Amino acid sequence: MPGIYLNLIGGEFASGSGVARNINPSDTNDVVGEYAQGAVADVNDAVDAAKGAFPAWSRSTPQQRFDILKKTSDEILARKGELGRLLAREEGKTLTEGIGEVVRAGQIFAFVAGECLRTGGEAIPSVRPGVGVEITREPIGVVGMITPWNFPIAIPAWKIAPALAWGNCVVIKPADLVPGSAWALVDIIQRAGLPRGVLNLVMGRGSVVGEALLKHKDVHAISFTGSVATGRKVAASCIASNPMKKVQLEMGGKNPLVVLDDADLDTAVEVAVNGAFFSTGQRCTASSRLIVQAGIHDRFVKACIERLKAIVVDDALKQGTHIGPVVDQSQLEQDLRYIQIAKEEGGELVFGGELLKRETPGFYLQPALFTETTNSMRISREEVFGPVANIVRVKDYDEALAVANDTEFGLSSGICTTSLKYATHFKRNSEAGMVMVNVPTAGVDYHVPFGGRKGSSYGSREQGTYAREHYTTVKTAYTMA
Ligand code: NAD
Image (cartoon, rainbow, N blue to C red; front, top):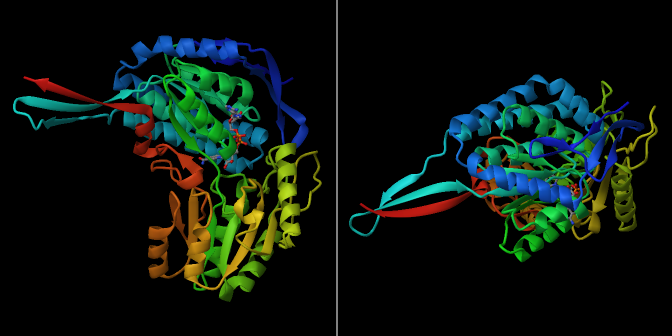
């Protein structure tokens, strides 16, 4: 029998207004567990608990914070196999990818633990005689976090760790599809010695728990990752609240990967297939738009098809699976809808796109590759968020760069080339927050900033030392000695 997992409010496990079943997308008969569904009253209790814990936590020592974050990292890493399995079971990414994501969460906590000890500040002379100026960073207060389903442990980790390191209290609402990994993470952090109320978990629906967090006057900042449509609502709500909330949004992408004639073909195919289809294409940084120069186009398409034929789509937990299922029925329907749209727009489906039957009932989709598409088609402009990619043929580098930048998104971009001139020009002129040369657009380091431009992001960067921008406010103090 699967267990029932409760919310964590003020250091106590609390039932909500009901439970929701967490279903394995590789086998819809497999129930991962039953998870509490929070109501508005639970959010109010969680925010009260966070507010009550803030005065003491905001004054806790860097050593205390370091110890808790480091202990959290140690437990995450020690349990990587078990937690990776839970993640793969609830989200559908392969076991290898699931373990990789768990390791990343552990590494994030280790890196951010060090940040607790690297606080610092500035003391500078005033322009006025006899006056000194100090610039320090202080925590924001209570931070609300709303996370998506595609990185069930890494995204909660890269928001919670810096928030705690900088002395904030947290209420997190994970995606309702995948609450298991977030629940396990919060349980680990709590047992690492965190005082009651500093971290609170309220699971449930965005329209209930998420909106209650956005409306609560004692929530001072929001960190959101999810779709553009929800992100817009989140930002509007944060600005409308009184006082206004500081807000950070990480949203969707339609990430271009340029392949130039001078690219190494094997590298380009590996980079494209990995970036477009691994993790079932369900990454905000996925290379869903492949922009390929005419001279290499036909060879590239042929080699991609050969590579895709060797890819095994199956149960995420099975050994030998390269790509797991789509996360749920509604995402599968969205993927199939876009495959149909691309066909109707004149795209040529050269590989995949069909539903697959496996031993267990699940949402299995063969990765789909389209050629003969233009950048004005919907398949080039809208985020599918599945294993679907299309190729736009271009005549030269200038056209490739123009097409790459012709999008309302700006999260990640990439180029495959052996030319230093084009690689350098692309890094400087790509309108994306992250630019990759001969490496996939998806798959990033945990110690450097993450985020995009244009419609993909709003507010300051996440991860690395840059994370402190969102989780601190700057104070400038003047003293006449
Ligand atoms: P989503 O926008 O549907 O949901 C994100 C979160 O918002 C969930 O927890 C959801 O319950 C909550 N929510 C929904 N409606 C809400 C409301 N009215 N008020 C408050 N909260 C609400 O996104 P998703 O389907 O979970 O995730 C996929 C999207 O996330 C894709 O667009 C993907 O590109 C994006 N994403 C972005 C990044 C990034 O860092 N840029 C990373 C991962 C995923």
